[in-house]
Length: 116
Length: 145
Length: 91
Image (tube, rainbow over all chains, first blue to last red; front, top):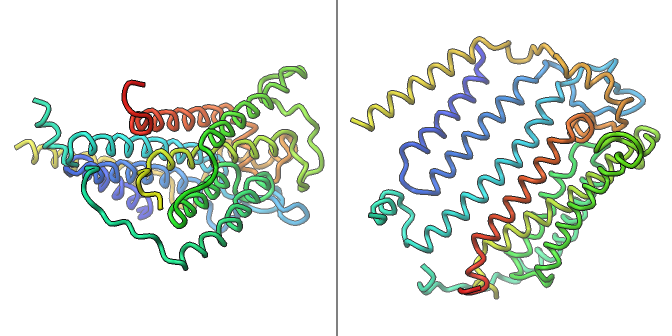
């Protein structure tokens, strides 16, 4: 009954609801970011070991042979994923600014209606 | 849209002076984090983000930065080329791309771990200038005061 | 009608995800697979005391190269979207 993993799925569900239902572009972009952060947090949380220290060695005392350390592999992969999430958010916000300058509104129902 | 009249007031003296004082301290802290990337927690991406945050503080508090934009984009491209050049050292010395060709040194000092130290320096410069350029493109130019 | 169908599908997806996530290992007890090898051998094979830097730049260096490319592409895309406002039309 892992309450931490269920919280990750709940945040993912809130983000998905925001992308599906809301009509303002900025709220859709916030929902997209929420989904990405929920998945990244879940990936890091699977690597946790109870009572262990961060994976930084401090040479006379703290070496990996004697101290229990947290798994370093998910942390290295999520670092890349965070930067990619930043790139997606930056490009999506630029498209939103260009849409606002062209159509004058941020409501996607009106923008879709203007095309016809 | 653009034509609406909005009153832009200049920020107060407190914000301008504090932004000018905090900027060199935050910049030095960011440089410290990516230079010591192989010894302490942090690294290139984190240090580059801190540098970009300090430059955004200058944009919001003082209004403009007196560095031409072409210099920032040129610095970003030079840092990317240096990163690939450090990777090609491995090809010349007999191994693969991105092979640790220089000697490893003594673990725990600043000049250790072969090419990992200089690679993080170039990545830090690249990420910092890139986020600054993204923000510079997105802001409205008529807000300069 | 379409709206309630959307909500129903969202509910089914979230419940399937929750039923999957309950079966994973208990939070805090991790069976370290290849992370064990990176922890033990990393200090002498790559030389950096920060073991995460070790993985990001030495064992998985190509992923960092790909990520630097993605960031560069995003910056170029943002500059391209705002080009006309800076330089006027017919350029």
